[in-house]
Amino acid sequence: MGKTGPAVLTLSLGVFGIITTEMGVVGVLPRISEDLGVTPSAAGWLVGVFALVVAATGPFGTLLASGLRRKAVLASALAVFALSNAVYALTDDFAVMFAFRILPALFHPVFFAVALTTAANLVPAHRATRAATTVFAGVTVGFAFGVPLTSYLAEHAGLAAAFWFGAGVNLLACLGVLLLLPATPAAPTTPAASAAPAGRRPSYRGQLAILRRGRLWLSVLAVVCVFAAMFSVYGYFAEYLERVTGLSASLVGAALMAFGIVMVLGNLLFGRLLERDLPRTVTAFPALYVLLYALLYAIGPWPAPMTAGVLLWGAVHSGGLVVSQSWLARDAQDAPEFGNSLFISFSNLGITVGSAVGGLVVSTAGARHLPWAGAGFALAALAAVLLRRRLGPATPAATPAAAVVPAPRAQDAPPAAV
Image (cartoon, rainbow, N blue to C red; front, side):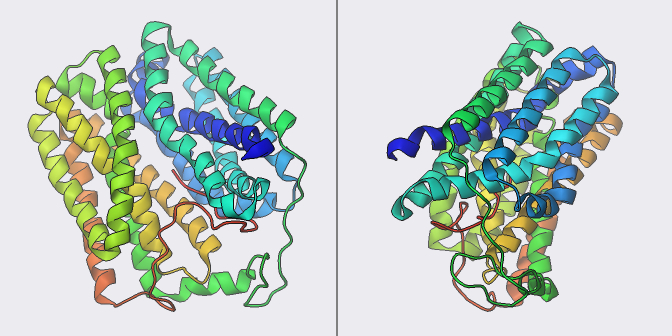
């Protein structure tokens, strides 16, 4: 990537820091519950409220930030994430920690949208997709190493050390943005016409028109249910492995790392399956999750089988992002940016709903029964997908758009969700 290589890698580091902040709490929820004196279900809301804020504000925040200079937006977002991690490390008040989960969530979708756009415009046109993919790789690396490292530090050096790590990564990325990124203005928008010239965004009216499609809302429902199925159980990963399987906190950290590494391979597998047959792959995904959760329930109390089950779990879990985004994109091909903003909002709504239901199960029935909550959401997702398939192919075009990253050189590229 020539001289722009370090700048693109800095953006990827920023994504890594943001994902580590967002999902790192998954591995330390039991520690937070103990150290701050709250119930596991209450601690679980640290995951849920983050996703809820992203769901509610993502498209609007990204729209408001579109008129600001990208370098300032990126640096400000990373500074907020660094500050929030520092607050987590210093506070012993759950209400304060909760409030500082809301603040960075406001900047999360904005950072992704601007970072992917900036990366695509830092390089020649034929390398734009590769640059955006490099930035998005920070998500997978965050799951593979950021989340388990946070868990490891919390167990061996204390909860504060885990959060200081997150603060340091985000601060380093912030400094990198300030030093390495050129100052670039935001791209212009078009007037209120239904079609947009090349290099400009479609009109707001033209994008909003897709909301009148019943097919789209069935796809949205499937996205919500898929993410609820994923995070109703994954949000309490540490709780399940510690309370049900009986693993130590250090072994849970190792399991989180193995889970993340397998996700890398699983993502590649699901990408190829989607290229071969998108409808069948999307239909098979929630069915596969139902079978997986039945297996996890059966082997949950047994450490050796559950260790192998974690690997299978990671492989299946990895498909949720690309499968859901590909499915929703079929019904928003003429408004891809707005479609992606819907994906971000409703996938995070699914995370919120799943985390809340998972917390309710933990507090009432116990962590042992978490897999059944996930299986219920997976069955609902399967029903939504099957009903959507009965309505026929996507309109107005029949070719699915399964890309996770924005198209090369796209101005104001769509944000990526996690």
